[in-house]
Image 1: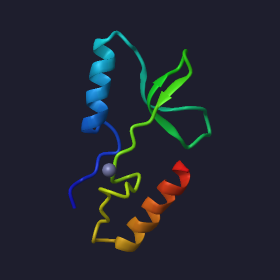
Image 2: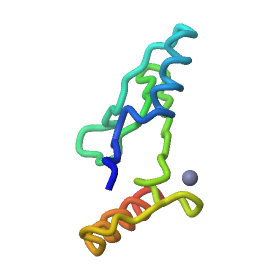
Image 3: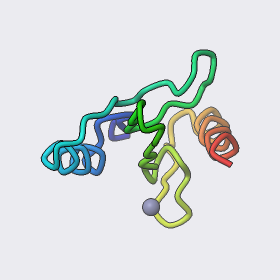
Length: 87
Ligand SMILES: [Zn+2]
């Protein structure tokens, strides 16, 4: 299985580069509140704006998601839990 990045994916880097070029400053992979599991991919803390860039693998995209063959059972549970958390 090709290693799947949790952060700093191609789409994230592209969007961050553009935002940075436009002069925006933000936090990356930032926990929204202490104790909360959810982390924002790009977070503007003062403006209270969060951007989530949901990759196809981790978020179970119906069109592009793949399931690893090794440890298939564990991965299915893990990825199903992600989808549930996202909802
Ligand atoms: Zn997709």
